[in-house]
Length: 402
Image (cartoon, rainbow, N blue to C red):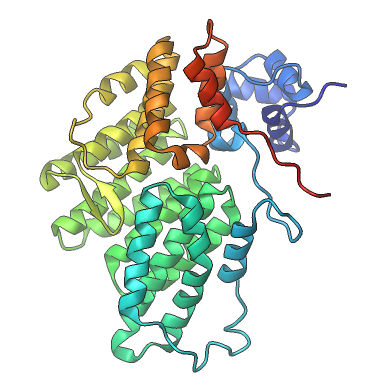
């Protein structure tokens, strides 16, 4: 009996109790033979367009279909950093009264640590970030618990940011449920901080968690409701920037439901806001501005399989785009995806190599580059550069003790 492919196993598990193979093929508008061969291990992949349709029919992100979800277990040796984050995130110190009377962290020092952690996140440096998060979470728990009245709001704000960083980092490790726990706690803490823009920012990041979980309807609902609340607020530049970022996240969620018209409406409103802000900004760690509008418009076009539009939109990216490394790399991934679908294999290869050179750590934690490179390897005679890239993206697995 042939071993199932990773993709085939994921399809089998995700459709269980929901679809038969025939039903899934009909819902995804693909051949049942493709579904059958993937699940049986007679095929190990399919075109990205086919996989995108299968993921859409199953209600999950493409990334969920492409690779393993790393399971957190008490005995698993593969992810000690994630386990340490889990233990800090779900600490019972407050239940045991061990936070009462504990020394509250200096909020200025905590603020510096939070700024440094955001810098690691935007640089795609997940490993050093994961290493510092357990201690940062412990300080975030103690800060609002022991803060004096004048500092309570600031302590809650910093704790909200720590949990927001934690949620997004956990997504990088595929710990989606833990990411949700951290994101919801960030929302609660931001409400205690009484800063409406921080509260909106935490909901924005909760929307990203929902999207990684394949909960696109929930992601859109949260983002649209958040945007409607922001419409009623003071129109400072920071306020407009956060509002625009939330609109872009909502558009991305709508596109992943196949709701192209709704996505276009949200993008159009975001374009109006970008015309008012004028430049790229990162208020409350939400990127927004002309470059981000191009990035997310390209994303929506790729998701809805309008690759010609995606390529045209990508050409509008300002040459001096002021985006952090993680955002630039995510955009290049969309560009490579569109290039490959349009038959421009050499251009796609060059884009992927440039992305990996600029952001090797970020690339290592993404599933889609491995699939794109895998497809490029089947097209003609692969170059040495492409084979070496494939080896870097698929390093040999270190056997774990049984």
